[in-house]
Image 1 (tube, rainbow, N blue to C red):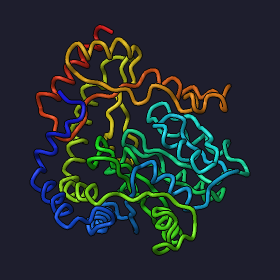
Image 2: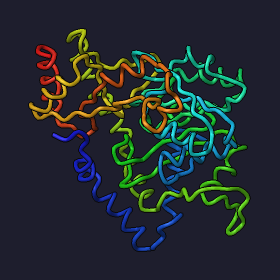
Image 3: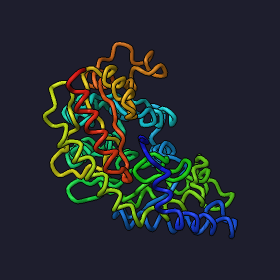
Length: 367
């Protein structure tokens, strides 16, 4: 059994993927070829966002977004403490300071009730993460942003394909970022990402930042990065997008089946909750387990792979622990010791789904 079966997905889409890649190889348009523009137009159509800009990774998408709105040294950006490291890392890379806020206990997203207390005169932005494939209450965050005149950005690295009040993730805020890392809901075959821009005044700046700050060739109006997405990676996304909505539906079906089976197991294993008005894409299907080490060992013995996302909150990582010594964010700290993810991908066989469910049910009886 695979935790994520990229080979099964490739076999299903092999002809389209191979054809799109060979088109790049045949015309040798490896950088900013026609596949890039085609990919960006397709991403705009899927999400409903006004503009999509592909880039070299989800991390670079965040960096470009922050640079594009002139966030830098002396500024603060609020981020959830519990997520992949890149969310805070991007803030540090532009010279700003991440301000960590705790998460909600049941949905794992930023605790909106704690956000305003973290705002200071130096706060310029807030990046929320739609963790595991589900958005928080975006409207509430946008209201806070408007009240305090700060940028609200979505880190949608795990939530491409999810929805909030009928709108797609990546089209909920003026600026959103996602990742096309191979294991994401929509992944390429290397690193890749995209920005989604609904506020026109930032579009040109972000286009320039993406290519070394160039307004046109050899005319550099600002400091930028080498942040382009390769044509071959865009070709992979172009081949995958037509079937992507089917994959989203499959993920929802599998996630729903898991939750139904685990809902009343015991108070020691808690399935993820889906918030009202949210469509969960299950970038990860993550349980809260009291005895995680025992659960992990049992699952491994039965041949069911698991993974931990994430074993430490960001303020406890060595890169930040000195600067944030004494900061206590109890929900993030507790979740880092108890969350564990199960196999989840659109191509799971019924037999594998059944085995996962039966193994979790058996584990609940003995751990």
